[in-house]
Length: 103
Image (cartoon, rainbow, N blue to C red):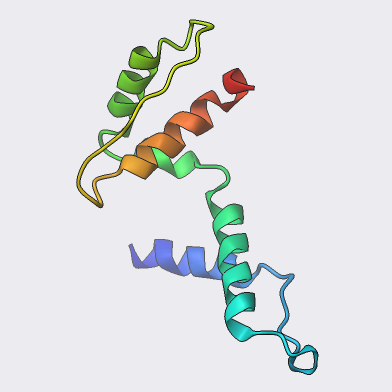
């Protein structure tokens, strides 16, 4: 686990593009939020690590079946449950696997 964290932090540290310019009176918290947003976008964009999580594939498959993705009708589904059980992870994995069919 420590190796994964070290690797992830090294990858994030290598990202560039944001600089705090005191002379421009930039708000430090605004810059930090921009950096967090940028890092989240760059590091989560692939989503390839999500498929390896326990139970994700079966949940994604169940959503796929309930939405009848082979149909041309518009469909919606809600994912509810206690915080921290993976609702967002399941939704993001489903999106990543099906984004080409959604466009």
